[in-house]
Image (cartoon, rainbow, N blue to C red):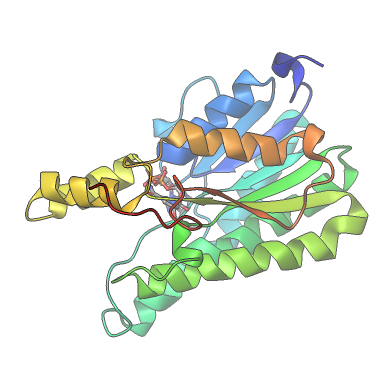
Length: 253
Ligand code: NAD
């Protein structure tokens, strides 16, 4: 099988596929031969090479309608990439109940909504795979990210539970844990910092390889986990973080 044919004949949903990491994933799966459906709050930002559907992953009716539209358009769904997510800054006192509910609904329950809607189609697929975007925040304690971290920790645990529930139905479920990645999201964060250049340097330095992760690097890991060639890989989280989780380097003298 050539790399080009890896996803040939398969249909993939990518949530949050109109920007950043999701856009890179959509491009990678498309390059591998998949037909890609982007589900996004802002579908007009999607690459015209993909089919784009308006969807809010925090709204069940919106998700059900979009997934039904994908199935209607392509007649199958084989791969679901649950990538849509939002950030939240601060410690546990920084956000009220409404914000806690909003972030958890998008980052965590959104995965359940989208995957549940696609489940009847995944059960029929010969190569069903789900990949959830978690974060380094799920495995390392980062300052001022309490709510976001809680949401991404839940994504990691949910990934394992989903993998167990659906293994015998032939559906693999894995997660990817990116380190700080160079996307419009981080651009927005940097533009709000008092000294954006100093903030970027601090983020670069936090990762042992000394730079931000690229969206394409995350997309490569997601493509591996989603690939029919990874048939024995389920319930795992693949870190793409320049060594931030696992390595302890001595400072440069
Ligand atoms: P981004 O802001 O560039 O893109 C996010 C996309 O999700 C946007 O197109 C947005 O419209 C869409 N989206 C947001 N809320 C939505 C909703 N309710 N319904 C549907 N679509 C929605 O962000 P990114 O940096 O590409 O992040 C993508 C994912 O990667 C997120 O889950 C994020 O938590 C995770 N992540 C990012 C980083 C990073 O440093 N950028 C690191 C680790 C994990």
